[in-house]
Length: 258
Ligand code: CAA
Image (tube, rainbow, N blue to C red; front, side):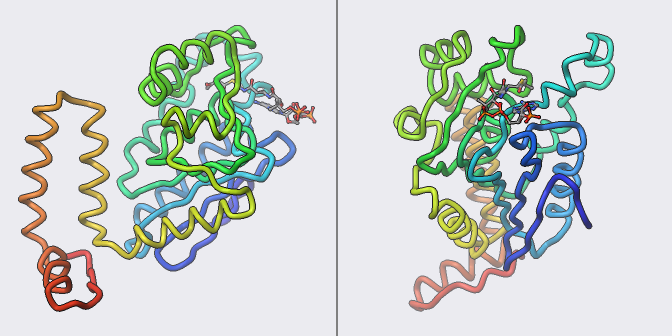
């Protein structure tokens, strides 16, 4: 499948999706989000794909929702089109891991898109922010909720009310990103993490992803109970037998996803 706003590359077990609207710093318009959903559908359907890396350019992961596309919309249009709702749900419901590899600006919808991924690896050049207040609006793809969960109320409130950006070091300190790497190592580090994930049991990977997500959706005691059930259920798979036998036999496991 070919895309106009994305560059999609396959390597063994990993799909890399690069946002590609350089003229607009990868601003998220309807076409780009539609193509992103289609690329995720294809990655979901392909059993050979075990992990996705989502990235942008050196200058921008994405500078937000496309302000030019949005500027003339009415409330009725936004509501009828469920503006960005369907795309956000598609990414939320993607069952395989998605790593955001962020260099440059991740602002507004760009920051929200990165937070929709399972974890964020940032280049030293990364800048995160929710500057919607400067446009007289609010974040619309989960920014007020997810940023607050990541960095806490005080920092989220300050960033959202003032539009202040956070650099990569502050983002790491605050728990928004898993780690910061030199810009020229960003893709290599993200692809290495993706390859490591791709080498694991895909069943265990999906269940682990669901379990960490559960921590955001439920109480501790319910989450721990769900974890125990899924932990037990993993013993129904051949991959558990293979993983533990390989450890005992001092060899590399050969996970088949069964
Ligand atoms: N939408 C549409 N076009 C955008 C854009 C956006 N979000 N961000 C940048 N662009 C365009 C610019 O208009 C410019 O295009 P032209 O050359 O045709 O004028 C091009 O990208 C390059 O941008 P700049 O010249 O502004 O580059 P800069 O280096 O001077 O500044 C920047 C970079 C600080 C990121 C600045 O572009 C900026 O502030 N962008 C807007 C950021 C923003 O407000 N994002 C939130 C959007 S609203 C949102 O996302 C809502 C939501 O939650 C769903």
